[in-house]
Length: 143
Image 1 (cartoon, rainbow, N blue to C red):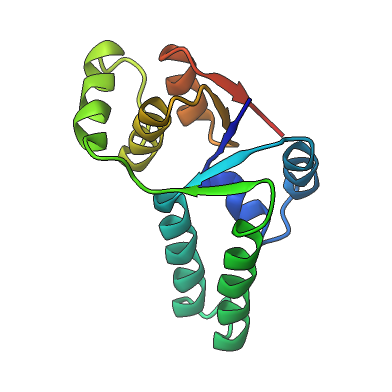
Image 2: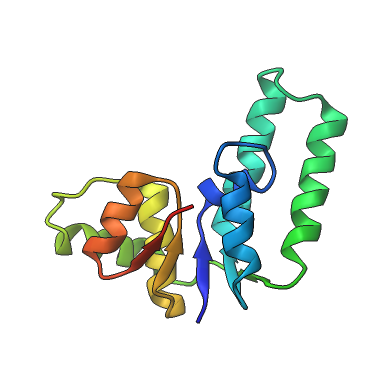
């Protein structure tokens, strides 16, 4: 069984946060953890934002990007390209949920990616995304 790793949890592997140890423990017990190119892009944007905001210096930001790339090239991680048709599927999710369950557009794209890839388990700390995922029949794992 595979687990889809959301950006919220990917970032916890790069920056020490309260849930970081729990995220790492969950991942270490998984045979396959899928990270989309969307999550990787979001993580790089967050690193760049911390650099631009003065929270990181350039050498550390570059080291974090290298660390992420190295980590994602090792077992149990697998990088998945963003499948074709993801935006349209995400739009369809809104109709299915009747827009009653709100989450960010990028989170909807993650859920649509999971659907196209045939994945049904999501590791996230984002409560709105988790609620939307459950409404679509996905299993959510929380650290």
